[in-house]
Amino acid sequence: MHWNPLFDQNQSEPYKNKLHQLGKALHSWNNITNPGLLNGRAGISLFFFYLGKFFEDEKYIEKGYSLIHTVFDDINKGYANQSFSSGLAGIAWAVRFLVNNDFLDKQALEGFDQLDKFLEKSMMNEISIGNFDYLHGALGIACYLMNKNDYNREMIADMIDILSGLSISFRGEGSAWPSKTNGNKRKLVFNLGLAHGQPSIIYFLSKAFQTGIRKDNINRMLRKNVQFLQSHRNSPDGPGSCFSNWIMPGEKPGNSRLAWCYGDLGVAVSLWNAGNVLDEQSWKDEAENIFLKTLKRKLWAPNGVADASFCHGTAGIAHIYNRMYQSTGKKHYKLAAGFWLKETLKMATHNNGIAGYRYWYLSSEDNYKDEPGLLEGAAGIGLVIMAAISNLVPAWDEALMLG
Image 1 (cartoon, rainbow, N blue to C red):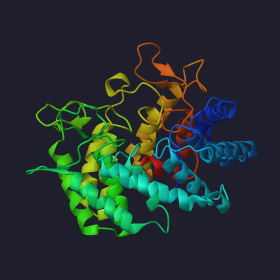
Image 2 (tube, rainbow, N blue to C red):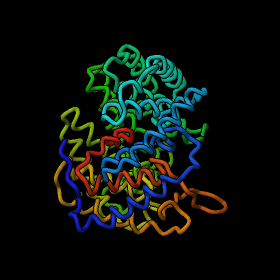
Image 3 (tube, one colour):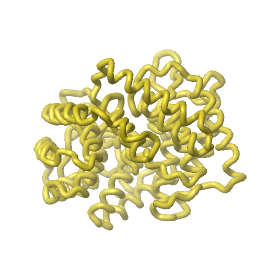
Image 4 (cartoon, helix red, strand yellow):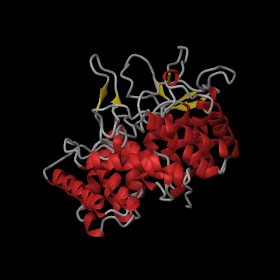
């Protein structure tokens, strides 16, 4: 895939300066306890490998190696979390990604056959209890396993069959999967966020469809779930979002933030990708309709924007629009990506943060904390900036259901 920078050389200078600041700050940042992909050292290593390639600076490459070696040390000591976000599935994805992109040699994969068998069992255990969650359950593990050339197709097919049986159908409104992430056990909750809900299932099913597994069943599942989303879209004439964070039958839906994790952008991304995979133009048209409405939402507070993170901040918003620009060549996506990248620079206001950045979270005390990781922190911001000012294809964003 050809990738075009958003900015010319002069426009890129402040972003290069910020990358230098991020590289310097993270290079000396030692308080990273988690080895995981999305919130730990494996993900931060991706930032350093890309940064080393971008600046042609060996010290950043060496930092990437150093971080990965500490991750292997944790695994050898018995680290057993299996999730994609913080655990072995995400770590394994990162290592395979680095091997496939010539950052690591193939000997880094020694022993992975045994690890993958453990993850296959973990995937089936999670889906058997209804935990399809991409970050913390079966879907993320399955997406990692499907990246292998010799993955267990029969087991993935069994997993899809179980997933199919977990959906709930609604007359005239399609079908959807009840979520285990909301915490309200007394009511059915259908999560509409890309991080944990229906869009992540659409991503997984689209990926599986391309492999030829259970194509007829997947085709039906996808069409039913898209119908559910279409049936629960907010009024197109309203001033707020197109979709709520979740659907609780019998309760009025609300608005959602503008972000990667929850809201309209995740729904639109999933419809766009599924439309490409199934050659369904109407889904792509609807995705663009949703995207176009989001372009009008540029204020921080009304849209739940409180930091620069990929998860629910300006960097994630910018990168999604950049992806759409690269896919379509349409100028309004380029302008939107540029706007939110400028907002990302403006977010670097914390004197005690990582290159000025801190992550917002709900707390009774200080609502901001230092976060170096890919999903919620400085490493993700840096990767987004590199994707905006270079022709390095950000293949790493497959881990976030975008590539």
